[in-house]
Image (cartoon, rainbow, N blue to C red):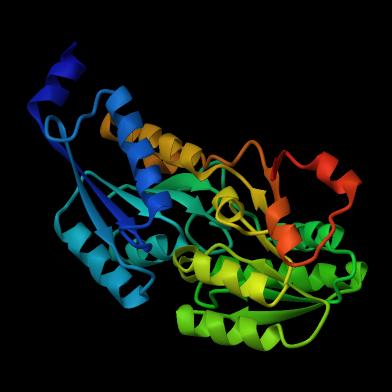
Length: 311
């Protein structure tokens, strides 16, 4: 009762930094899930909590500027959505607790010291380890056995994206595939890199999760279809939007878990002692309509392994 009375008497402030567009429907769905979970835990905007949002639309300079704005507000907790947000916030404060969500390879990226006891002022929800790059290559080869070339569409400024590329390169000899980097920072890069790669036959794409590929996913998907390139993505919503296949986890759940960590920190928990949470289930999703549009016949045995098949 005393805790609830204290909570009711003070409005707590949370700063949330997203490197994605504020109008993106997937981002809005994740933020809605985050707010709902906070409300379930007793935190309601306008009553006992205030959330300050900043979006940067994939521009790293704007991401850093937005991070500085949020830190200047001296919030009780900062929430970082994806690797670029952590990269902007981490060097700017060592005291304000930071909860991240959908962040890949946080140890290799230098965000935390280890998964069990992250140390410092940062903890959160871990998404993909570097080895997933090899797994994406394996799944893509199983979907399209004739592949001989695969481009990894990635943001070279994100250390985890580069790690995915290296893992795919390391795995490529086992699958008889040549892996090449396709570095992108914006829509123009995506158009140029994918179009150039698609000029030769037997090619496919691994599309790493990053602001450019996330915000411009319709462009990536349309290019893959036009150039008849089998492509694999990290999240189901790519496949739902017309992409061929995805292998990953449900991101909305991570935002709900992030809200639980924010709640614990607001109630006195030390972020250095909150272990990183990892996804518990990965899902393979196949879009048969996308396969048909590029003239690809997916092996029946492979379809039986899929968690979801979109007709």
